[in-house]
Image 1 (tube, helix red, strand yellow):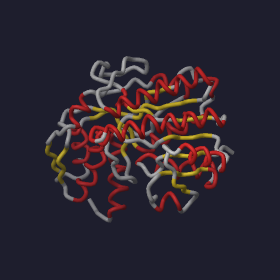
Image 2 (cartoon, rainbow, N blue to C red):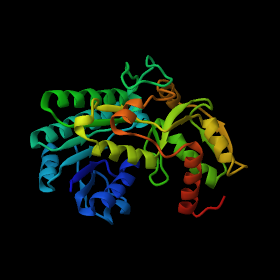
Image 3 (tube, rainbow, N blue to C red):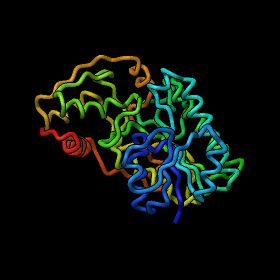
Length: 317
């Protein structure tokens, strides 16, 4: 049974990913890590350890002590936060990834899965049906760091035969973890506000189309790629997506369940970031090389989000 260490485990993706991994691989075989005090969900079913990925001695010691085979490196400063503090994004996203990849190389671990993002693309990238192999040239600090992740990981694969794998996540929608400072966070915030206040002020314009996926599909894609046969992978970085929508389209879907819901728009600095990203992704490479296929569309995701959050918040709609 593989032993897996997850960095940034208290983040939006990590919180739910750790739980699914523990059910599949065993609680003691999945080590959740991070710098913050963890939520109870990360400590009740298995080990959680404090880890600063910028501390190389601490990182190497933990990988050895827990006999880790695979590192899923989720620790990252996201797009909106990265624009407010690009120096922090550099240290966390670039130096942190370097430390993880070096540890995997030196210790001879089986695999490093380090997520990328649609933020790796830029204004010169074709925005519709964006191919897997295409010019990137992002204009946000977060995007710059994700291009580094992709190229650095692919270099380590060629140079040192490190089994590096990466997913370009689109916007991820979750009912469990709160938004973590990303440009697509509106697609989570809107559900909370619809249930609590029946209205929402969106920080993106009504026609801002972006690729998205429900958290269940995000976790599915992560585990599917982690378990894929290395010999069958021709690529190292993969587009993945489930659907694309605008804030106005999401609001209309919510109104099918909460007719009185109202949305208004006050775009801020995140609008420029969103306008530099793809509107839809071509994930055919992931489908061909390791069988990627999402389970959720917009309607099913909306229904699931409202059901989960209403129960979580103790609200009826």
